[in-house]
Image (cartoon, rainbow, N blue to C red; front, side, top):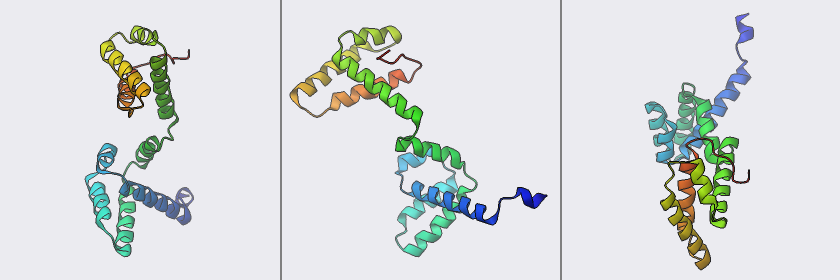
Length: 169
C-alpha cells in the first residue's frame, strides 16, 4: 500500500526538472528581486554562485544543486512572485488597470480628484493636484512622462490601502 501512495520515478524526475527550471529563473533575477523572494541562505548563496559560473559543465552542476536545494524551499510562493513580476497574476493586473483608469480620469476630469478625495479622507490632495498639473503640462509640451509616472506610483500607494470604486462605476 505504501508504494501506491508514492509518486512514480517519472513523476519525481518531472518534479525535479521543474524545480531546476525554477532555479534557472532565479539565477536570471537581479539581487533586489532575490532579496524580495526571501530565499534561504544556502539557496541564495547557490544562486549567486551560479551567476558567476561561465563554464557549461560547472553551471550545469550548479543548476542541479540549486534544484536539489529547491526541494526544501516553498516553490509555490516563488512561482507566485514570479507570476506577479511576469504580469500573469490576474489580481495584480486588475489593480494596475484600476490605477491606470484613475490616473487617466484624473488627467481628463477636473472633478475626479474631489471624488477620489471623498473616498480617501487621508489623501494628500495638494500633492496629487500638483502632479496632475505637471503631468498635463508634460503631455502638452511633449516632454518625457516623469510626473505622469510619479502620479501612477502615488495612486498605486493610495489605492492599495483598501477598496476604492473603479472610476468607471
